[in-house]
Length: 178
Image (spheres, rainbow, N blue to C red):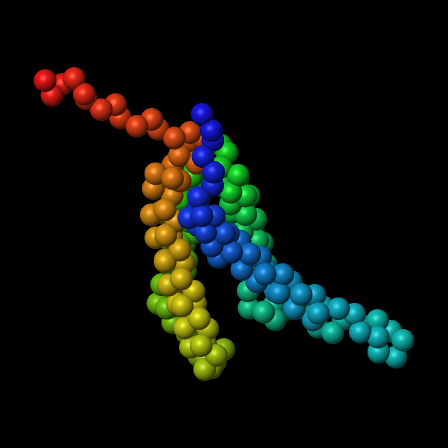
């Protein structure tokens, strides 16, 4: 009996979820680290090295949240790679659970940001509303990807791929009609 090939739907589900939950967050982490590295780089003024900026958090994002985002994205990337391979068989359920959990975390984050009162001492700008719109748009895409992953990973071809074999066809009852 031959092993079922990876269906196109499984490939789309794994690639789309890996892009949304691993590649984009890792790019955001890399961008934050690059900005932080730029502002703390050394500048030579009058032959004396001095950092451009010291103290304070210029990005407004805690170091712990950046590390957490990087770790979660890296763990999901490992899950996606194993789901791409199709082994072990429980990876089908694990990637579905991970996508649902990460989408729920994103929902909680968006709701808490919307409910949090803005600190007027810091100020508000039109960029805040643009970033909220982008975040909401990204969340809508994540919901659609989550629904697709749940739907396709529970279809017969995906189950057969992760199981490693096709189920045999039910035997027809030829003698029972007599």
